[in-house]
Length: 294
Image (cartoon, rainbow, N blue to C red; front, top):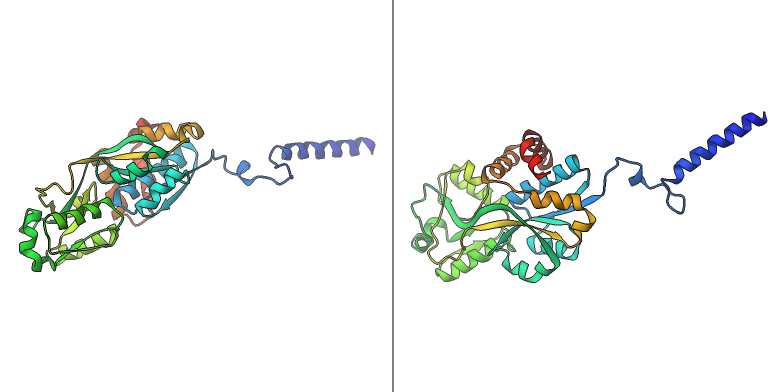
């Protein structure tokens, strides 16, 4: 009997000892330490722009499946995104257009963030029309106000592209109203106009899936209000290199070509699933590309 009680007590002590390694000082067990073995959580911020959605979801898929982190993705307007990274509430923003579009934000927040380099080269901003529209320059817009209804269909008001469009309206003396909206509302209006073979002018940028779907042209900009070709950069919060060196190393290597990003954006736009699931499928189908970043 004594021997049996001794064995039972010894077993209980062993169980208690094993649980102690997973307990907080007050005896509560941390779920995070006995769940899926993830290394931590990476907070990604993005704006509702086609290339940003594609790149951010691809980064999330890689961080989760290849590197072993949990990921939170938060969408907001561009101003709050920069504020969040600068304040350390978000870890990374992979859609910073320079040297022109986001120059003001970098001037304000750049000292509180870390530049992780270029993710995409040769990006551009412009006013865009369907190819069947018989004008080629912004200078021709005032001669065709009635044809376009005196409207330029824009995106979210905080975007650098919208600021460039406002400057163009002033510099060219355009008798047009810039209509705020989003990437989604802009492309919906563009698609509807093309379906009906109607004229429309929108604020546009590349990379974007719309150039693969429709026959479009960018209007010439003799005054250069939309700037020259730009690059897209990745900016991280300070301290990410020290806190998550594996994540930082991957993000610094993360870079996409025009064909790669166009393929990914097209898959997300045409797919019926969630962007993260589609990005994960793209990741699995492009192992050679992914492995170069890892």
